[in-house]
Length: 156
Image (cartoon, rainbow, N blue to C red):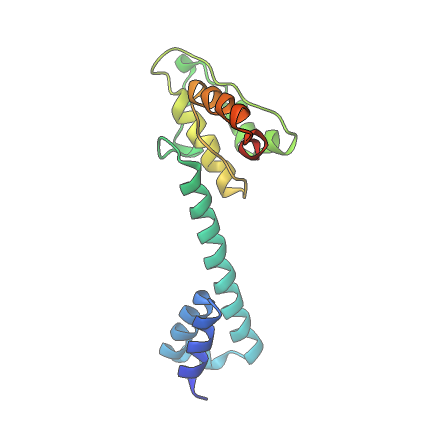
């Protein structure tokens, strides 16, 4: 079978994950032992994985997070006043499914931004779109949107 026309068609269809997996299969003799269905399954799995990773990366990029943060790196010590079970519960993103909000308060420098960015990052990993905004900027944008008629679009 000529793989070059097949590769070109896959590229034309924007199936870059399948192209990469097919190139990997062509370079390695170990795939010859697999059945057609197993090899095809590998191609499809690779395409889905690459698309999922791209979607996640796009969500993280569009969130415009102020810091690169993740839940696992939050320092949960007794002196900071953070409740370990609460942070772990929030990391499951159940609060999003239940349409609840989170307000993070505290003194300057205690890590409010980091926690917000870590929760937003986790939400992106779970498939939710997020956006980082400080309250003064959000209020300003909401008032401008109300005035120019783009309020409903901004809320989306």
